[in-house]
Length: 474
Image (cartoon, rainbow, N blue to C red; front, top):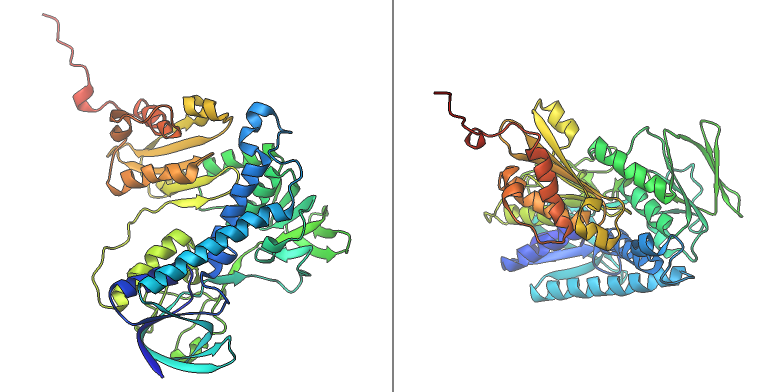
């Protein structure tokens, strides 16, 4: 029986980061993954595939050039599922190759198989070779991520009624698509296929969606996606989903029906913890299979067992999972490290993109913080004209009391790249004056920061040092 300093269950972003960190610290570390290739959900069915698919769609459809050449413009007239999957498989192969190289370089051992706890410091692994092996460790990190939520009343068949994992293996592009669930995954796929000129209906039972995003920003986004052709139905609870062979029929509680060639069910995910036998080590999960941890150390209530990534819930981002894994490994191996930044960017790779960092208007109001807003439209920038952007907005919230930046919300082309300027200013406690004082490359979309900064600056009380001192009459 082999013994390790740290055993990591799962090789997604948090597991990968933890393993490499442990390797850098010259500790004996093992990564166990139940799939036949390393990388986890992020590489094989989540982050990387969906973003690769998005880039392929935008390139082949000529989406970015349509404002110049018309809505009928396409780089490739007949786009097939093979066109989408060819680039996808090349990207995934590259990601796995890089990950395996990183593990080898840092002396990280790997084992493919399904792991479960048998004793507090022992796991049993059913390997893909058909063997069962036991191994022990001083510390453990659960980084198993999530799996798709599949309600029993939805007739999944892997072809016309699919979840988000199966959707990536579609045999042919549907002419019409119904997406159930306006969460991040549902919104990304729905807007992506709208860009391919597929007739898409997005159904959300609640009256709102993406509630963690500033409401004004969501209103701007909603206007754009509806203008692009997406049929967005909010407050539409589903009564029945029927597989009618030639089509899928969705009956809504309000009496309406949606008939499409394919249905993608993307309403929620569950923590992939049911096979770990957590009760044997005294751990319990919530109703969605997620673990509770100390958000500073990522320790569970069992001190030598840690958890990180999507399995611990919000924000469930690959980017934050990477940080969580690194911090968890350092704490588990008694190594001091830099703490995580309080401000991180949230990116949604829809069409158009959404990205935010810092407070929303609702949060500022809830905290009772007096604030001012500055807004820049991408069409107001020269770069926006060059790129043919008709939409896009950068919104900035600034404290009236301290003049500090409170938050930035961006919807439009390049939002997930542009947001990092806001992240830097927020973490360095910068003020609106930064955007007014500094020069931005011209022409760039980043210039929108200066426009929004000036917009807020000109609405705010004039600082004492800039007030004109008029001499009194003699």
